[in-house]
Every structure is written in C-alpha cells, then in structure tokens.
Image (cartoon, rainbow, N blue to C red; front, side, top):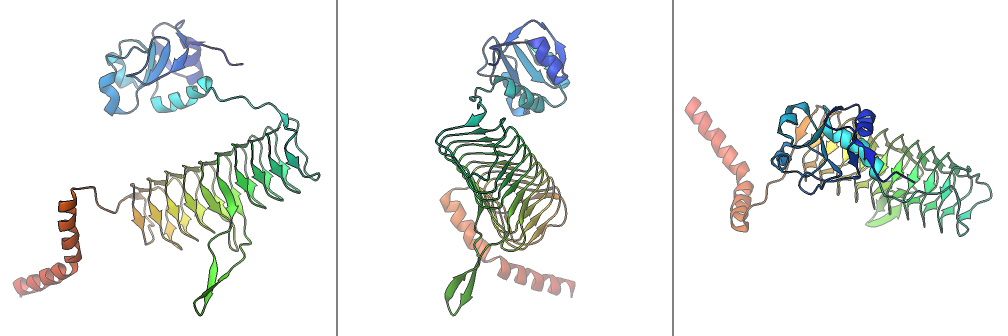
Length: 341
C-alpha cells in the first residue's frame, strides 16, 4: 500500500530537483496552481498559467529557475517542470494494484504458460501458443489471439483485443477497447464487385508503446504494420494496414493514417489530422490539428492545412473566393506578362 504523504525533501531527491524551502513539508497529493490546497504539490510549465502562481495555496510548486522569485511557497527547481510532474504523478496514482494470478473465469489455452508474476483478469480469453512475459497485466474481458507475444511489464486494460500473431515489446500500455491486428481494408474490384483480400501480415509493436482507448491498428496485408519504440497513440486513432511509424512519434485523437504510409521518428500529429496512403513522412514532422497530407513530406518542420473557424457569413464569402483562385492566378500572370512586356 502506498504512503498517504511524502516529505518534500524526498520528492526533491527523487526528481533531482533543487529545493528552496522546508524539506519536512508533507505532500499529500497533486493539483493545479489554481485549485491546489495546503499539502498539495503543483507545477508550472506553461507560461499561460503563470498568473495563477502568486495566488496559489499549494505547499510547493515545481517550476523553472526563471520563475522561482515569483513563487510564494516552497519551490522545486527543474529545467523541465512538466517532466518532473510526470515522474512524481506515479507516486499519487490511485489505480488499483493488480495482484498476480489467473482469475477463475479466465479461459487460457493449455498450450500457454502464464508466469507467476502475471495478472490475468476476469473473463479473459487467451488462445493457443501465446507467450506472456513477466509481470504482464491483462484486464477484464480482453481477448488475446493465437500465437501473440507479450513482452515483460505490458499492461492491457479492460476489453483489449489482440488478433492472432501480434508481437508486443516490453512495457507497452494498451488502453480499454483498443483493437490491434484487425483486418486491413483490402479488396480487389472486378466489374464493380469487391473481393476480399486476406490480410496475412502482423502488427509489431516496439518497447514502451502506448495505444489509447478505442484506437485500432490494422494488420499488414503482406508485410507487417510496425509501430516503433516509444510511440504514443491517443484515443480513437485509425492506423491502416502496412503503416510504419518511427520511434517516439506521438499522435493526438482522431488521427487517421491510410495504408502503406511510412512515418519517421519524433513526429507529432495534432488531433484529427490525416495522411493519405502510400506516402513517406520524414523525421521530426509536426502536423497541426486537422491537417490533411496528400503528398510526401521529406523535410522536418511544422505543416498545416485547413482554415480557422469564422462566422458562417464570412466563411461562405471566402469559400466562393477560394473557388476563384485559379482563375485569379491566371489573370494575374497575364497582367504580369503585359507589365513586363
């Protein structure tokens, strides 16, 4: 059972932070600057919230050295306050601890050996020849298809579905409702009739991958769908067949990646952005929210598309002008030729 509080000095030592204040102050929880009460620890990383600092009631604040003089309470100095908050958040996580063992209602094929350190929840189904690593947690109602391989310390929340032959590295975290290894959208057309193509590839996840709730990752048609080390996928994302996502890329909710697209390392895709199929996106590409990519992006940088919200009246006027852009450009070129001539 976790302690109910921690001395501020112990927190500072764990984070490698410089403490300015009383090391014996007991910290009982975390809160935002504006909501914090005595006994709670807060943080400041986004300058937009700096105006809450002077009035905070928190017992201590994690912040950068540049903001220390404006803080009215104990201070933990870190170059990256948000990272410090991320690390210390686990100390106060109230999620239930999963005890090792197999629930009596779970159905485990006799060919599967479950380590004593693993936790298999109620109504879990594990099919033949699955390999389960040490300290793996499989939540209630999850289904693990035949010949899947789950690395050490993976955690599958409730109702996760892994189709057959899925490979998962160590320390992957799969949230509720995610489906990994469903069939890709593959059909051949003959005289207007669609014929289904068997999807015979796998999905391979690297180490430290996080897959959000109700996100789907399709298996490959021939080659594998590959999700690199440290990739973070938000809720309600669709990754199509044969997509490859490079290490440490992150995608917000509602992103859609069409089939056979290759995405580089350290990319960040904003919410509801989309990438067409068979494209190559280079390393360190950032897409702002609702960006639609229809061509290759070989160079790093920030890319955007779409228009910001406006009144309907103004938007309709702009939409009309947008349809006139080609004709306007042609007229402009003709004028330029006349001036140059």
